[in-house]
Length: 319
Ligand code: PCA
Image 1 (cartoon, rainbow, N blue to C red):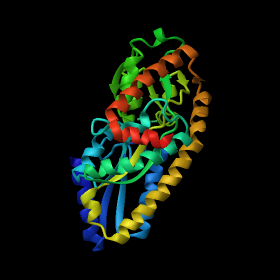
Image 2: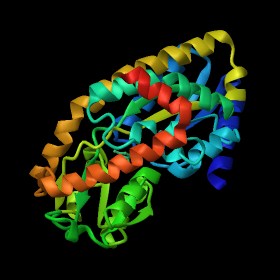
Image 3: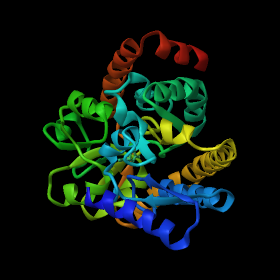
């Protein structure tokens, strides 16, 4: 709460001192400042500042609100703008989980097609929650990190697994691991203290958190490409004039294009850094991969049932 008060009073002060009519908006980000999602969000903010009277202040690394708080905070208007890992919002609506349906879209091309097919439903679902969608950008394909070699299923049994959404929790359970939900900002500590011993995530997050300091194995599973989205409180959006809205939409579509390209460019590079830092990088052997796929297929069927006709329509549009 202190942080919020500080940032509001800082904005008020800026107005008082300069006498400019500019409004200052906070953009709450969950991931580290040096991650490409945050860097591009900063470029997005800079483009808006350069072309409108709106000031945007980015708060990376969960410094204003932690990842799990951002959706609720923007919805309640505590921050006008925020970024969230979409698939962590499955409790709100199964549509939010579509990018993390296991083995549905496993490369950038497939992820793009899935995004194109599901974007109208995503925008609609957000609008129903009083939020306006701005842009969405993928994480690289998801792999499996483990402190132990995943040479067979026995090796996984009872491992403490760091989850970031319901799908990763349920994958872990299906494979005999014990999930705990932990935000990326808390990851290094979780692995350093043994609270986590395995996770499914991209090379990006392992790189940001120097996971080679705690984890020896990365398996390039390419299970799905989850996305972040940037969105704005609906009332705050409606309060903007059409020119400012236009500037933000243009900045959002530029950010989205840059971000998809950056994610794809960096995907292989992150994994090279694991090898350079002494991690063993491999693919899962046939038996373990088959188990991942089997649990994935169950989760896919479960998602299709929960997502109903709206989900099915998106899957049909993909074929
Ligand atoms: N990184 C984020 C979400 C998916 C990813 O690749 C994380 O692990 O929290």
